[in-house]
Length: 199
Image (tube, rainbow, N blue to C red; front, top):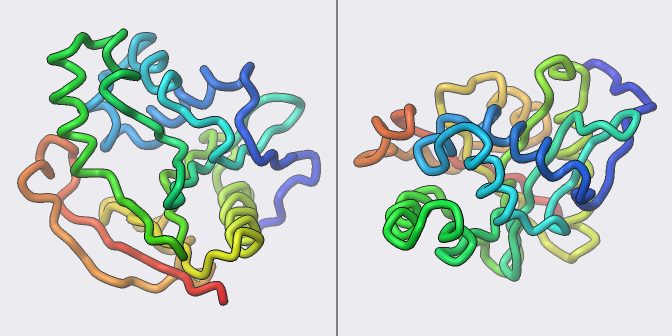
């Protein structure tokens, strides 16, 4: 496994001045899930950013530039804190309602003793350099510190690279599920739920 550059720093939040970069990176890395809901371009970035809970993530930076981000979803709060009210300024009432209906297919509500990885995104030029591994390791340390015992995630089957990373870090497949009836819209047919027991 490649060693991560020691000049890359991990933060337990998303700084305000990096929020737009984080939204652009999230939209790019998670395009199959997010573009059908948010679209592309400036409005999509602003709408996504408006729903961020900036305390519920781990960010990787180098020279004050964002190189990676991991969203956290716990029972009490999550990184993607999206409601009709956060979407309405960008898509209107009707547009917000149908977007929330789509997001419901992607949402997972963690149990009290678990944390859910709500997306990992790494700048393309930093992939394969250990950034994702460090973000996940930091999340596991955070979860242990919170007294949580399970880390759970869902990975689309069209992303074997991510599945391999999670397996190397001790995650095991729990179940495979089809994306019907919205799979065609989101661009993937199935996904695998994976989990790692911490304590």
